[in-house]
Each structure stands twice: as structure tokens, then as C-alpha cells.
Amino acid sequence: MLAVAATFAWTGGWFSPGHLDQSRMIDTFEAVNGPHPGFRRNHAKGVCLAGWFDSNGNGARLSTAQVFKPGRTPVFGRFALAGGMPAMPDGPEAVRSMALNFTQVDGEVWRTGMNDIPVFPMKDEKSFYEQLVATRPAANGKPDPAKIKAFFAAHPESMRAIGLIKGAPFSSGFANAAYNSLNAFRFVAADGKVTAVRWSMKPVDAFEPEPEQAPKDKNYLFDEFAQRLARGPAQWHLILTIGQPGDSTNDATVPWPADRESVDAGTLSLSTVTAEADGNCRDINFDPLVLPSGIKASDDPLLSARSAAYSESFTRRAGEAKTPSAVQFGK
Ligand code: HEM
Image 1: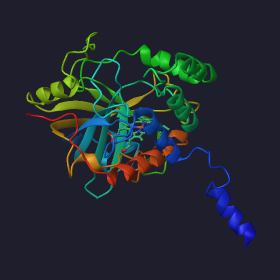
Image 2 (image 1 turned 90 degrees about the vertical axis):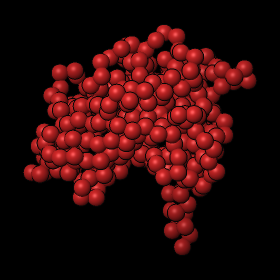
Image 3 (image 1 turned 45 degrees about the vertical axis):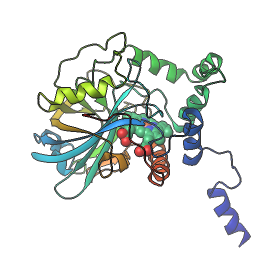
């Protein structure tokens, strides 16, 4: 009996209360950003989107997922800024995200969260946690540069990734940004063939660089996107990039070679943007492991770490009172 109990205690982490689990990760987001009940603990400032995906059938050779067969799939989603402050001002430094939910005709669902950076700065849960702690504001309200320096000294892969991120300039808005899965996944074809894939949403709107000085409107990126939709849906091509043997599937800090084959699987159209509210994207968890058959997780350790942390963030915010989000339209 005692041996069995000890096994449970060990797997439950009772002997190592300081170990890194989703609870400690989310506690740390809260310590860094302060309490913001009702909001996501990361990517806290955002709006809800709706539209559709028109598949051209090209992705069907890689995956049996219904979304890649020719035809239309309804989509809803969320644009957000990375960071745990729900009222942070929009600015040139903010990483933008696009989260999407595809509800296939067969009822299966595909959820994905993508960022407008070329690689992710951290390779696993532990280093993500360490950078969170290193960037925690000190008494003067600013992070301690010595701690940040020590983090990068211990994580050369993060240093290299930041170099790549700085080398890829941000676009002027949500509609002309490219969003990347960053993590690799496995596509399973009808004959059982498995292909490593990273995907991106590449904008139809032309790239324009971000203004050097942020406009006065604290929500200028979100407000401009609402104005952009007045001219018709914003569109992106879903590009599936095919990994080759040796391409890293378990380290999102490492890019794949630029000459990898890619498949344009169809066009995403977003036609509606609304403030977060009851019943729209606000109360959804864009867990990257909600996948239809035909798409599987890779060996990237960030995927299960994300799934666990999002679940904890979702559970906490679902039980909290809601206050209106910073971005409201038509007010
Ligand atoms: C261990 C690493 C990571 C941790 C701990 C983490 C943590 C979080 C948390 C707590 C949320 C809010 C979840 C919610 O309440 O619904 C979030 C949102 C998000 N994360 Fe991560 N994240 C990690 C890595 C990544 C990576 C690699 C990407 C790559 C694209 C990513 C993209 C996003 C996006 C797009 C959202 C916003 C989803 C939405 O709008 O609901 N994250 N993250």
C-alpha cells in the first residue's frame, strides 16, 4: 500500500513542491503582470474574429483532415498582443497573434495559435519560465538588465532566435502581417505517410513597415483593422511548409531552410471583428493540441507545455468576473 501511495505522491509532484507545472507557470505570469481577473494570463489584449477558409484541395495529399478537401470551412478566431496586460498600448514592439478555430463539416475541430515572428525565442517550458522570471519588473517598474543578460548567457539558442526576430521587421497592421505556427506538427495522409509541417498565414495585403513612433490611439492596431474590414474581408494564404529529414521538429527556436517545399492550401478570409464578449472567442481556449484526425502533435516539448498552461489560464479566467476589454468598437 505504502509503495503504491508513494508512486502516486511522486507522479503527483508532492515530493517536489517547487517543480515546474502549469500552476506555477500561471502563478508566475500573475506575479509578473499583476492580477487581471477574467483575462487570459498571456495574450491578454485582444478582439474576436469571424470568417471562413476556402480550401483548394492542395493540402489533401499531405493530410486527411477534412479542412484540406476542396470546400469552405467556417472559422472564428482572435487577434491579440503577446503579454499579460489587458490594457497595454499597441506599439511597434508588441508581438501580434492570430488564433483560429476551424469547425469542419464532419464536426471535428482544428485550433491553432500563431505569432507574427519567424521563430519562438524559447525552446522549452523551463527556458520559457526562466525568461518570465528574468523579465519580471524590479522595484523601479523595469526588468533588471543583469537578469536578462544572465538568461541569454545561459540560453544561446534564445539569443540566436532573438537575432532572427529582430531581423524580420514587423508590418504596419494586423491585416498585412504573416502569422506562423512556429511549432512543427505531423500531417498524416490517406496512405499513412507522415510529413513534418510548419504552417503560416501569409497576407494578401501588401507589407508596409510599422511606423517608428506609435500613433496616439492606444488601440491603433485594432482600430485600423476594423477600418480595414470596411473595405472587404482581409485575406491570407495558408502555406504548409514541408520539413525534410534533419529539420528540427522539437526546437521552435530553429528555422527551417528557406528553400523547403511549400504548399498553398487555400485562402482564409476574415470579415468580422468584434469586442470580446459573452459567447464569442473570449471564452475559448485556443489549445494547440485540439487537432482533427490527419494532424498530429510533433515531438516539440512546447506543445504539451502550451496545452497545460492554456488550460490552467482558461480554468482560472473562466471562474472569474468579467470586466469590459480595452478594445471596444463604435464607442
Ligand atoms: C511554454 C511556452 C508557452 C507558454 C507557457 C504560453 C502561455 C500562454 C498562455 C497562458 C496563454 C493564454 C491562454 C488562455 O487563457 O487561453 C497563451 C496564449 C497564446 N499563445 Fe502561448 N505560451 C507558450 C508558447 C507559445 C508558442 C510557442 C506560441 C507559438 C505560436 C504561442 C502562441 C500563443 C497565442 C497565439 C496565444 C493567444 C491565443 C488566444 O488568442 O486565445 N505560445 N500563451
